[in-house]
Image 1: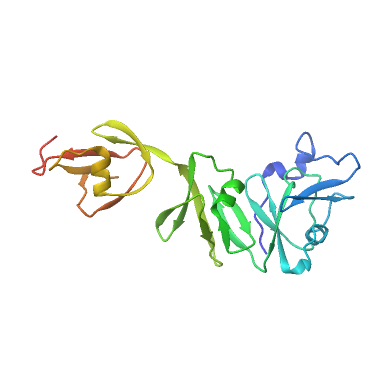
Image 2: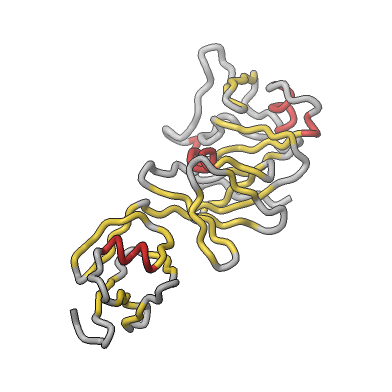
Length: 236
């Protein structure tokens, strides 16, 4: 199985200086599995030993995931983990027989089950309170609600990224801060206060003014510019 590489700060060189983890007062090395502390007399247990010590039996029915600073990766039952290295403070055990993969802002994650709470992804990816998580799928972008659940595909890798919840757009060159997302023409007309009988247009990627039809929908992006025009094409 291919694993996602650990960040550079978690490599062997991190034993030099503050990146190293030190043993507890009793000489043991501690970590957590699903939030519960477990200790080892020696700093290099195997993944199977970590599962066993944390009470997950039989160990072969579980997947062990190590959460790093920028992602997560699965740990094989016979794979050794050096708890003296920074970045080995938290593991997650799943009752599962497969690995699911996704990226968040370009960092690789491995997960033990096909469903994940969006709040868990936010915590794992250190997503800010003013940011939303967006799933890129089939050429579309889907904003995931904070209390939602994402179904991870068993084949391939899902791709997610974060964006600011509020973005700045311009109506008649005046800045407006609005929630990101997809809007209908009617919603935008109401939001901007377009004059009755006028047409709402936006500046597309080619720099062309494009009218929004009565049943149109548009995904709003940072910096977009909107204008109102009289139906005959004259300036407002």
